[in-house]
Image (tube, rainbow, N blue to C red; front, top):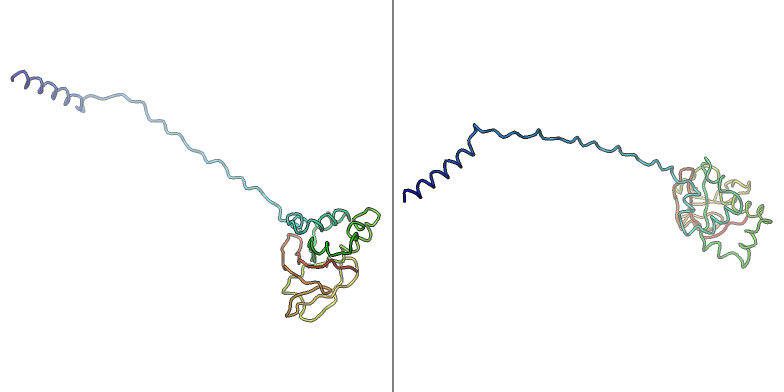
Length: 182
């Protein structure tokens, strides 16, 4: 029994000695890594021009093809401001059979340009700015269109404006359901 007490006392003494503050353990200083945040680089995205908006909307693919064929892309992507009465693909499909194909031919570029510029008014005209009574407004091609914000809906030359105030960096688009012919 004395042996067991001696063994327990010896183990306890060693355990206490291991915890004693007199003994110091050399440790290496902690390495603190400085976390440096990566600079946030914001991509500067130029605001969408009228052409960019049209290209980004599948309902305007025929209009985009016509703008390209007429060589008006650079002009309509220019400074502006412009108000564009933009016919949808369905509006172009409603033209007489073969009319669109004929207009897209290189030899008909002047006629196509005249039709497309008939859809453009200089300046930015928002839907709230449309007159309550029919008013003639000069288009980029020089001919006049009649615009009105009637209670039954806004129109340009009788074509219904189905979506208004589609903003672009260089103007505004009003979607119409008919191709306007000068």
